[in-house]
Amino acid sequence: MKGKIGLEEHFATEATIMDSHGYLAEKIWPELKSRLLDIQEKRLAFMDKFGVEMMILSLNAPAIQAIPNTKLAIETAQKSNDFLADEIHKRPDRFAGLAALPMQDTDAAIRELERCARELGFVGILVNGFSQIGEPDTAVYLDEKMYRPFWETVEKLNMPFYLHPRNPLQKHAQIYEGHPWLLGPTWAFGQETAVHALRLMCSGLFDVYPKLKIILGHMGEGLPFSMWRVDNRNAWVNEPPDYPAKNLISDYFLKNFYITTSGNFRTQALINTMLEIGSDRILFSADYPFEDVGHASQWFDKAEISENDRQKIGRTNALNLFQIGR
Ligand code: GRE
Ligand code: ZN
Image (cartoon, rainbow, N blue to C red; front, side, top):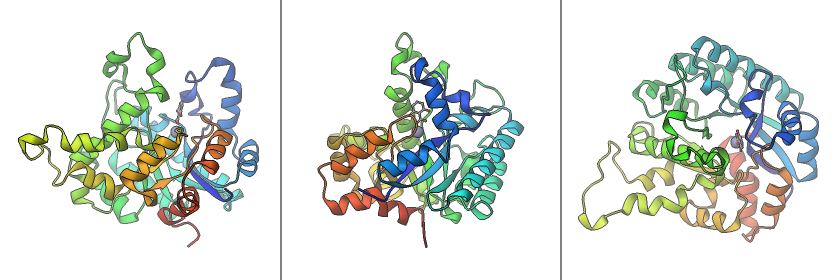
């Protein structure tokens, strides 16, 4: 399919590049590094070759969220957003941007978001899970009360918010000890991000700001498969759920969430996700350069779904969600 749009597609700056080191085999690092630092050359060549018209770009992970020094987090976010805006400016027909935000300081995050939306023309936000604030050993999640004014601004600006994975802190990762291969994209990213998304849903956030649009990658980080069980475990006792939110978790999942195919190029998983959340809420993505645009595209272009669904998931859902070209 020509004209695809991807929205979990990363770059790095010199300040954040080392955050992506150590996940893939060491011999791959020079190539991964050069792909992360490149915007206009190798990346565009892959896009052309595999029918990707646009990438909506975001900074690598965990980057800003893992800078406990608030002042440095704010500066690094600003610099990265400025760099991205310059690169988009060179090819506005091929690139758009998601804001990196210093969630260490709610007011600073709001200010940077407003700048990214109004001055830099970014179309959304991407945040890499919890933030370390002040001390490296802290993990502050986005359902915390301190973030309510931030979410109010996100809703007001109508900016879709991509909740991107990161690894848990070591002190929260005992279950992975002795099994380092389960960290990162194999399992820990998805587990961490799925629980974070469930926290948002349970917290009542979407009762207060019902127009929030949250995007999850990797075919929903396992949530589509587990949604029924989340709402229906032990249903015979007929007790209302014990959390602040007013409705069932699946009500928020269906109303406030969008899902991308990033890094999960599996037709069985896609069809399950279509059955759970519907093809209007699923969007193509690769997760370049951690994944291969060719793998993503060659799978998606031939996946056994209708051509109507392919157009929606590959392109038009992204145009609508990010209000591109209108
Ligand atoms: C990502 O950000 O998507 C990512 C990493 C590291 C390894 C794999 C991966 O940051 O998909
Ligand atoms: Zn990613």
